[in-house]
Amino acid sequence: MNSRMAIRVIVFLTLTGLCVADSKGNLALNAKAVQSSLGHPLGDAQHAVDGKRDSDYFKGSCTHTKTEFNPWWRVDLGNIYTVHSVTITNRGECCKERLKGAQIRVGNSLDNNGNDNELAATVLTVLDGTGTFSFEPVNGQYVNILLPGNDEILTLCEVEVFAGSPTQNLALGGTAVQSSTFDGLTAAQNAVDGNRNPNYISRSCSHTKMDKDPWWRVDLLEVYMVTRVSITNRGDCCAERINGAQIRIGNSLENNGNNNQLATTVVSIPSGDTKIFAFQPVKGRYVNIFIPGRNEYLTLCEVEVFNTRDPEGGDRMAIRVIVFLTLTGLCVADSKENLALHAKVVQSSTHNPLGAAQHAVDGNRNSDANKGSCSHTNSEFNPWWRVDLGNVYSVSNVTITNRGDCCKDRLKGAQIRIGNSLDNNGNNNALVATVLTVLGGTQTFSFEPVNGRYVNIFLPGNNEILTLCEVEVFAGNLALGATAVQSTTYPQSGPQNAVDGNRNSIFSRQSCSVTNGDRNPWWRVDLLEVYKITRVSITNRGDCCPERINGAQIRIGNSLENNGNNNQLAATVVSIPLGETQTFEFKPVRGRYVNIFIPGRNEYLTLCEVEVFSGE
Image (cartoon, rainbow, N blue to C red; front, side, top):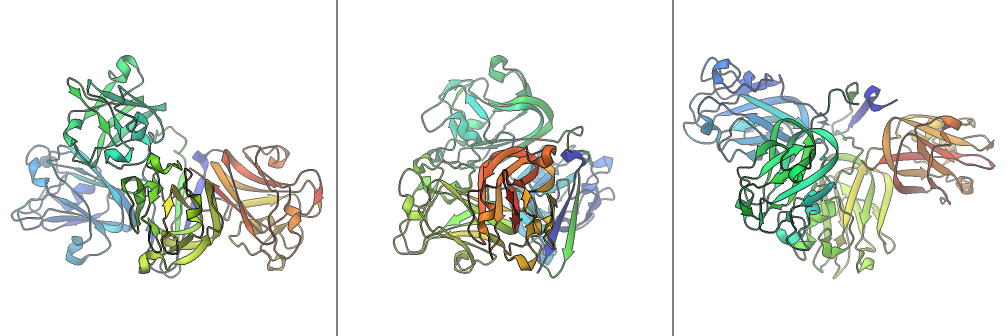
């Protein structure tokens, strides 16, 4: 069974106040809209959410206020969403310049008609046609377009609002090449490393030599219907060099791919900014950035490529049901991905430009601090680093990559703290784990799920330096509440106990699964969809018999032959101490079924919790 027939039910448990919903579609479509005034009978506020991008005002699909002070338009999304982009279609047959300076504001307040909510983006140039404005995710129910000034008219021919996880960046980590390479800091691959740092010295920008017709190309490996490309321009100088660059997409490598279809042209990108170029779908495997007709340096600090899902593809029958169980207020969101990736981060101090806080969430586990992918504070009292997940999650695992080229011992004693408070910069939040030994490489810390928006790494002590080469944060146990079966069942110890979300390891509490003393006992959970599994956590029995789990195999795959026990071996349990939870990490294994299997002996298989995580 593949994902197209799957029904995913995501339950958001509402505990104290803020429910953040999830959506992949245009949230504004046909939603309730209002505006400051009605300047013309054809200019109703509702016209901007009718699903039509027709930019001819007289076709009756645009809004229009009176000439007034600070005109505004607002859409009510009907729920709180984590909004990450807004697409605006401007009037086309006249008056395009009127929209310049308009502000996009997102939030939950109706003070000043919603115009005091957080400023997410500004229309800085004359918008010709349709433009997409992407920004750091902002939680809100209301999206306002505010045009500050005297004697202004606000006209909008369509407003589209998008939230949830943005479509996957197809270029991330792809194979990139360029016409030439300026120096050792500026490889083509830097433009697809997931890091938007626009400073040349950060080693996260590609850079050609002064070529005639310079170009850069990424290979997506498969053919996609590409609809958007984001480019981050250099920020420390030379912003004008990108002007006139062409985005070309197709399947040919003739002329290095530069003869493929022209999708759009870059007029300009402000210094250090990221700009999204949206266009009609273009089918292709290769995406080129190409500056024709002049001698130029081509510098790209990040290129991101996005596609529209193929309506004939595997998701077309998928139904995503979001159930809100309103208990007392705070909605805990769901995720199967690394929540920290490219999230907003800060630290107590920054040693040098190579040690920016953002480097710890750039998706790169490179542990050589000189490669520009690690954070680094000054030597100070109680240094700290913090990531804002943008929402409240039930966090259960944090993965840390330590510096590898020197100084591994510095991280010993670091604390992982999670919560919703920024008192003491978040360092007073709940302590969930401590780095007790010298951490070599990458390690995952698992703990009882803790609800929180902020994850801090806090290193208590005098004259300490905190360096983090990657921090990954995970919530959303794939196995939680899923259907489980086992070879046999000992009384009051059904297989479902191992996926009930309770790590209580005492047998009498009836939260552990137990088989009889079977030959080759096994337990299996059905995830309903195929995932790339990278981690499984097992909680062992705590009141006796911890040695029974020794030698258990974790097997993952899509087959039910031999009850799933012939699927790929991902890891073997050597031992798990009495009552403890141990996380087993391995290279991604694709599968729907996860088995715990003890081969070759008669044994009781006891599992007090099994948690399954995907690295996707």
